[in-house]
Image (tube, rainbow, N blue to C red; front, side, top):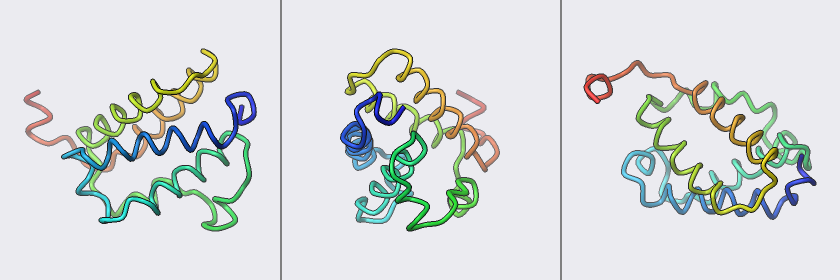
Length: 127
């Protein structure tokens, strides 16, 4: 899939667009340190590796262990939905074959749902 979609430049564009959104997002921005650069690098390396590119992520950081790496932050439905909205907007900027777009989105959506570690809040229940 990595080569089919255009390799690292496509994942670099996806992640850069996503983090431009994070920078101005009132829900997600507080979860990150002032410098978004390292988080952007990690997500790009992870996605590149996951989709068949170089294994730089594992070489530098070990096994992904996504839930373990995100347990320090309260990720509820609100955060999940904000993450998915920004990622959907970033995906919309890419020119991808339909099958690749669907496969990548399915993975991103599944990952986002799996990282929810906080119970629904009263505000979520009232929406």
